[in-house]
Image (tube, rainbow, N blue to C red; front, top):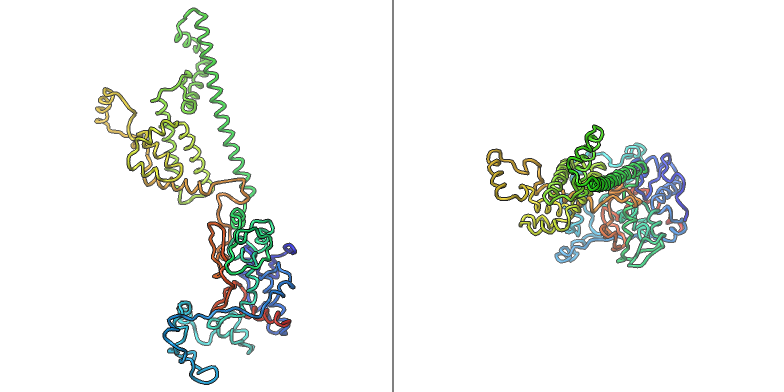
Length: 545
């Protein structure tokens, strides 16, 4: 098979292709019948042009001699025989008259009873056409070029009366191609074009009935199930990567990692310096023969430069209390001090959650990045709380918290710890301190919720859902498609599945139910070409048979 030819989506001499390409969509919008097939040409020329247009869409990657072997003049159709009609009539109502039966006026408002009166499909089709007939004007034609043919007195009957009440057999000309594996993959929306579907088959990403099928020309039989690798489907149907955007995100993540590494390195260096300074002070105190420790420490910071340096160190130590668990002297923090630091961290997380929830309706790339940053910060805060604190908090949860813990994702643990730490009240105190602060609270009542805008249960659920969606569709730079995944552009006009396929998009599998057939008013072979083009193409291939 030849590869894609240059100017495959030519805009000067357009041909519609089996592809989701935006240029192909533009050519499809420009597709007309009159200027393409000119009826002042010979019948041979008309057939040649129609064949060229039809083969441009139906299997251009298939060799002409291969398609000629596949072509069949026997076009499949289906006539509905409703059981209600068969049970109530024996066919005698159609036996009147001679030859083909009694002729009836097609404009008769009360036509005789037939099988179409009992067919649900036919009833639905007629109800769909009723509004069009209501607003139709007499002596007008539905075809855009019908006026031209009427003036030239060469108006075919199917131009004056649109193809609605007949069975469009000619639209089934290329029905044998629908059995091909690559075409079926394209029809099931697993690939953006038949050429890409063929590539999936050749590279072993397609299975038929559980076995790898590397032949894109394999003809499916009714009941065959074919399956495509989900990663290939995500790549084919997802939006492609933007190199500039990928480079920007990569640089941003790299800067974030560098800042985190620098922060950890500064905290470790500060911790080591404080330990070294404390050891030197103890050593000097021992050498001086038991000198006053606090006085010596105050004397060591008499100069302004030393005082400023000490203040900077104390400020940096205050920022790293929660990360290192040490105070400014390098000693471990008490449980109450550590809990206070954790609560201050969770305050910031709550404020971030409020801001994220306020922007969840207009989530863009930057907002999703903020969601991921919030998730990483929440994970870091939860890891610092320690397993023991988490276990203790989970034991003290009430029924409402138990219900919240049933949610999926990271926010379950965050909400449980927020409730388990009793952030709505002050830390545990002695009875005397509680009585004293109770009197102060009576004068000026102030709770933790008033100081910090806590998350309500509804906001917790919304944030949990937001984080769950981000966890299900995360950012992964190793993927060949854009993440978080979203459908590619210009997909909507091509998003349909034929009736002869049963598709499960969750597992990227489909079943070829039966061969496509023609019914009254519709054909199951998807084609953008009008009826007369398919008719002329059928006559072209019919000449050799």
